Amino acid sequence: RYEWAAKNVEFGSILEIGCSTGYGHQFLNKDACYIGIDYDPIIIDVAKEQQWSDDASFYQADINNYELGTYTNIIAFEVIEHLDNGLEIVEKLKKHCKRLIISVPHNEPKGFWGEHHKLHGLTEENFPGAKFNYIDAFGAITEEMRPVDDVNKFNLMLCWWDNE
Image 1 (cartoon, helix red, strand yellow):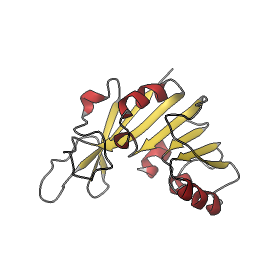
Image 2: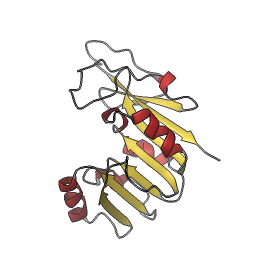
Image 3: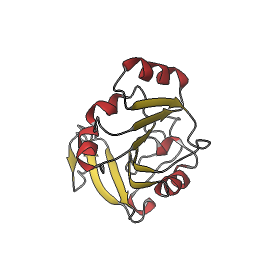
Image 4: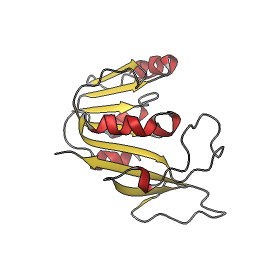
C-alpha cells in the first residue's frame, strides 16, 4: 500500500496517522515534509530512533485531540476501524488536506480481526465521494475487488478524496 501511496500522493507535505515505526516513510517522497503520529508512545520512540530522514518528525498523539494544520496529503492506513468515531474523523481529515488516503477492511464481520476493531461492515457506501482500489489478502492492489473465498479471506479498501 505504501508503494501505491507513493505514486498517488500529491507533491507537498504528508501527515500520516497511525504511522507506527515510520516504516511507510521510506516509500514516500523524501523531499516532502513528513509528520507521523501514533497513539502509542513506545512505538513513536522507535520511529524517532530510525532516523528516516531530516524532514521526518514523529509525535505521540490521539487523533481526537491532535491540533490539525493544513497538509497536502493525509494518510491513515488501517486506522479508522480502530476508532469509535472513525467515520467522523474521516470527515474532519478531509477538511485539512488536498488529498486524503485511507485504507480499511472491506465489510469486516465483527470479531474477524479482534476486539480492537470498533467499526465493522464498512463498505463503499460509508465513504461518499471517495475513489476506490482494493487490496486482497496477498497484498495485490486492483481496481476491482477480488471475491472473498477460502483462498482470499478478506479485502481492504483503499479510499481517497481530492479537495480542490
